[in-house]
Image 1 (cartoon, rainbow, N blue to C red):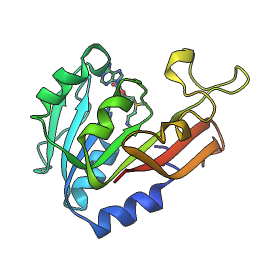
Image 2 (cartoon, helix red, strand yellow):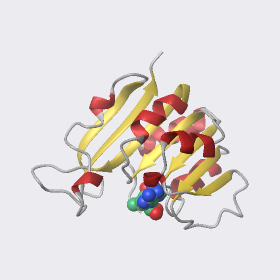
Image 3 (cartoon, protein in one colour):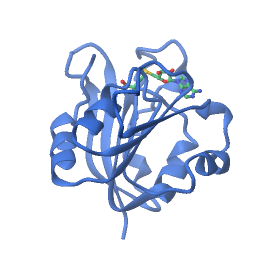
Image 4 (tube, rainbow, N blue to C red):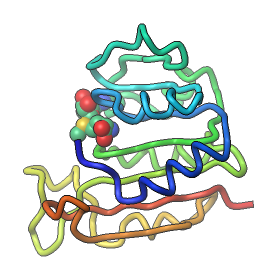
Length: 170
Ligand SMILES: C[S@@+](CC[C@H](N)C(=O)[O-])C[C@H]1O[C@@H](n2cnc3c(N)ncnc32)[C@H](O)[C@@H]1O
């Protein structure tokens, strides 16, 4: 399991605050479980259920194909909730960048990390699923402010990634 670049920042936020989080494309639930361990409530979404949620009273899992869902349907599926924390790790569906600022609470944080392509080189076979250079920092618009930004080789020194932490603009 590769750790995200801003893991320390995530852990310190989890310790400092409690609330409701959204883990998009949660996979085997590494981060959903981590959040639950810190007593956060988690809405965990993925196209396929890959982990057992029964032992985690704080995790509410929904099976959903995020790529083939409109933002308004997704909002409905989330019961029009707003979140104190949103995670988007190693999954890219750009319409989420329009939805996330609308469902992130004031003083909430959005952590995003995924693969990027540079000079035609990147981990994934499909270009569309990789971030372009500086793509995350350019999201410093509308309701999102970039707090931390990194692009380069990940901590395992294997892949090119971009990682960022955003807050809501006030
Ligand atoms: C590389 S994993 C990342 C998992 C997790 N975010 C993490 O970092 O540990 C990508 C996840 O995206 C999910 N996924 C792929 N296409 C999806 C879709 N259309 N809708 C929802 N989830 C999807 C996969 O099932 C997989 O669990």
